[in-house]
Image (cartoon, rainbow, N blue to C red; front, side, top):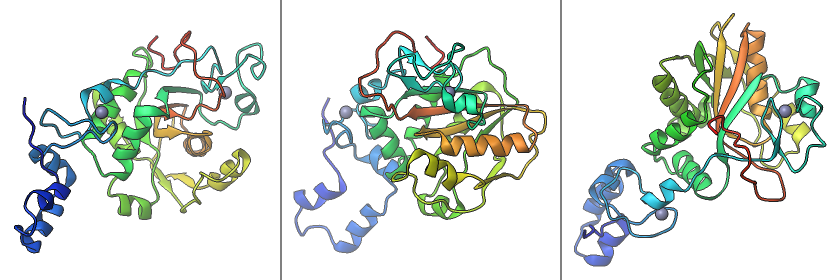
Length: 279
Ligand SMILES: [Zn+2]
Ligand SMILES: [Zn+2]
């Protein structure tokens, strides 16, 4: 099948000087999702030419790449993977969960925050490619055991300023997908009271300090089993702060569902046990 070799940068390459700058400005202002429908171009992950008209600028091969997370040793509660069993007690629970700083009662995650999945999340969040939300939401949904019951789905909120500059809350898009597939109500029950510093450069204890008290439940979740949704889990500090806010508001149980998590093990994951709950 032939492909329409059009993109905003190629327009001028094909017809140098033929397009008035005013018309070019119209083209460059077309939202990316619509542009992709009209003019497919290269896969944004592997750079191979896209051969089908698609709303998602990622090829079929790259879309198939993300696979469920796996690890030989992991915490029974928060599912953090470890290189060996030494951080785990006789019940298979890690130190942070034993210390009670996690806040959530259980956790599920689809995959490792690396490779094609990491690229797709980046395109979704920073490339304003919202059509990827359904693809990523489906992956996330597949990590949730079918026999676990929840009353509400609550997304981790963005500070209003970040939401305004990004245009959407990526966790809310994912949470909405999961809520619809599971037939559970989506409730934006949490608010971020203050903008927090970027977590990227902070150590684990400083991350917890940075986000502690940053979240507040603005709607009642008293007596409810809450499914808390976030896109990426790094140390879990943000999710823990949200879970603790939900517990303070009376939540009976908080389960964390994330699309991807940072794998801090030095070695690559082994494939004995999946962490996603869909083994
Ligand atoms: Zn590709
Ligand atoms: Zn744990």
